[in-house]
Length: 298
Image: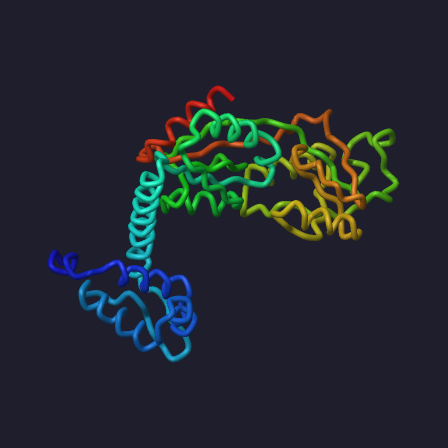
């Protein structure tokens, strides 16, 4: 196996990663701009070097073996580190001193992130920021693979090798179509809406956030009728506008200019939603420490 490490090249890893993600030779080869036969040959060569089968192949499908699944996780980590190394070198040549990759849920850009990023850009102008709007699940996956340095999410379910910090707490707001009979003056509690349908964030994306919403209804003695799920505020707003249901979101998102909807802030309830910053304890990006220090101040 030692000899194999001297013969495996980055192209082998890139080809393997693409096929592992597409699980389809034609689609993978098209994205790699090579022929299917060339891709097949490279994968066979990699398997020979590793002395293990990475894929189960049949006429109908391609699937990762257990060894392939294990090798995929390590491959993604290696390729991400190589990409980061190349980016950092390019930034250095341009006079910059590093890059921080940040993931965030939509409400973070409406709350804590603008002031934090503005302050950071002023004090550390030579550190480049890469920002990606991602769900909680996507952020955790990206943090694990080192394709993110820092995540801002509404989930506190992280493994022991991560650090987590509560950075912003806020109320919830009810989202209604503009022609709904309920107003701020007539609103008492969500018990008035027990016969309504709701559009909620899916449970599998953030159990903590979802459970807070369910508890909000349970406090009034009922479970909501869930018509749709969505993680995207614009989608939720459009569904509410068109009478597909009501919704409850963090108040920081209650800023839409959509004239077909309106909001009622739920101030008199115990539930508050929390935004967490999450990063790996063993993150080796030296630039991250500057942002974390600034996060303490903000």
